[in-house]
Length: 281
Image: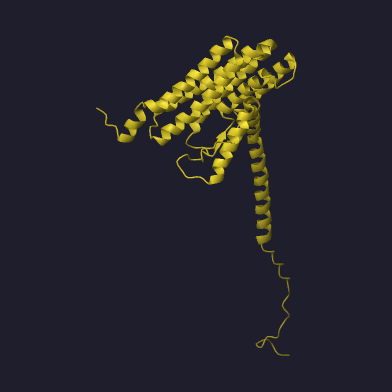
C-alpha cells in the first residue's frame, strides 16, 4: 500500500469550502447561457459578472484556509472555461454576432479557442511565471469586456445602429480572444494580500471605487475593464523603453570604462658604439 505524506494527502483531498465558490461560479456561467437562450441578455451579462466575483473568492478562500488541492485547481479551470470561455461567446453570439453570419460565429470561436489556450498555458506555466503579472489577458477580464459591452448597449448607453453594434461586438470579441494568448503582461493583483494590514488610504480608495461603480454600474464596469484590457500594452511599452535605456546605459558604461590603447613605441636603431676589444688602427 503506497504511503502518502501529509502534503500529498492534502493535495489529493477534496475540500468543501473553496469548491462551493467554484460551483457557484460554474452555476452563474451556465445561468448566463440559459438566460441568453431565453433572450434576457442583460441578466446574462450580469450573471457573468457574478461568476467573476465567485471566481475571485474561491482561490483566496483556499489560500486563507490552507485548503488548496489538485482537485480544486482542475475544477476551477473547467468552471472558468465554462463561465469565461463558452458562456460569454454564446451570449455575444446570441445577442448580435449571429447577424454577421459566418463572421459572427468565427469571432465567437476565436474567443473560445483563446480562452481554452489561455487556461491551458496558465496551468502549465503557473510555477515559472512572475506572479505579479498575468501572461496575456486573463479570461475573467476578457469575459468582462464582452459582458460589459452587452450591458452598456442594452442599457441604451450606446446610441449606435444595429450594424455598427454588431461590428463593434465583432472587434471586441476578436480582440479579447487574441489578447488572451499574447505574452502581454497584465497586473494580477496577487501581491495584494487580504491577511496583511494596509494603510488607511487603501480603505478610502476602495470606498471610492464602490461609489464610483455604483453610480452607473454598466458604464463604469465596462470602462474599467476597457482600461485594464489596454493596460498590458502600456506595461509592455514601458518595459521595452526601459530595456532600451538600460541597454544604452550599459553600452555607454562599457565605452567609458575601456582604457585608451597606448600608442606603439617607435622603432629605433641603436647607434654604433666602439668595441673596446676591437682592432686598433
